Image: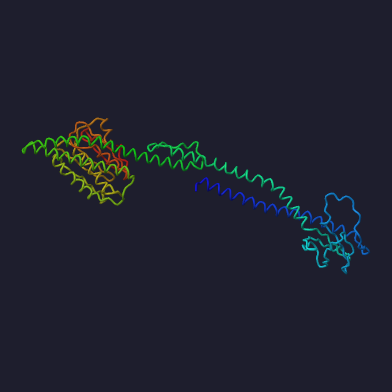
Length: 446
């Protein structure tokens, strides 16, 4: 059942029920007011009758009366009795109010099969009893007339009220229908935010949450599109090189030419494997948003793993790898809670980049401080523009022939951010070589 239909059903059931409760309350209030009015009149009649009754008063026919207007005297009766129960006086023939010397005040009883309300009065110092009574039918009729006079217009207007509530409910849920209609009319790629200014106040939290969802979906789609475009752009070159090397290898005869073609093909496959691995790693980091786990970091094990991974490339390029590992006052440097697998990737990428872009036969140094680590090499100086672009995805400095995808520093920055660390890239002292420092608030972030 729709929200609109459920609300209409509740209102159409609740409105008549509330109306009936109000009717019952109105009847009770009207009856109370009528009883109060007539009881006052009965008391006044009894007191007036007690003033005119004397011991010598005898029962006789009612006095001749003039025009009584709209009064129905058949509904009223007054009587007086002597102490011994002898009827002294009565204003009605055929109506005998019961003699009750023990009663004093109002009594509800039945007289000749009809309900009556009678007021008994014992005059002070008198030897008689006075009673003034009225048929309950008169009060019931007056109560009904008063209540129906008030309720009848409401009864006639009840269908109009129900129609008005139906119209009001439809108007109230119109913004919800408008919102759903706008969402139905949108295309799959239309993720622009919904307007909140003209939205009902009750729907603004929903619209705000949906806009947040649209923003997250758009960011995810943008990340996937960027990954696809970057992959298509970056994979085009190594695939073309592999195809060319394969053509050379197929046409080469056994000998030095074939060996060189096989070597180049192997290097191309290595580059392709490294590129795909780094791209998948970067995509996982960008989509994750938080660390898989946090544990005390064992830096010696991470350094050993990262340096052993980079050692074949360093030996091929005759690069000397070294690590400066100070332990001031017995404390381990750069204490950190994080994910060792990701930090191993971070350090391996730093060392790999340093080794690849260092001149052959030079050195790459890894140094730990109390709250940072840094990697230095003897690379050729680069301009300020190139230095500012280091860390961009798929950007590689000009004039380098080493295999690379430009993703290494992007991965480093993402892993560092997940651990609350900054990455700063700056020239070494003297202007030759580069230093990459990773630490808490260390210098200019890349």
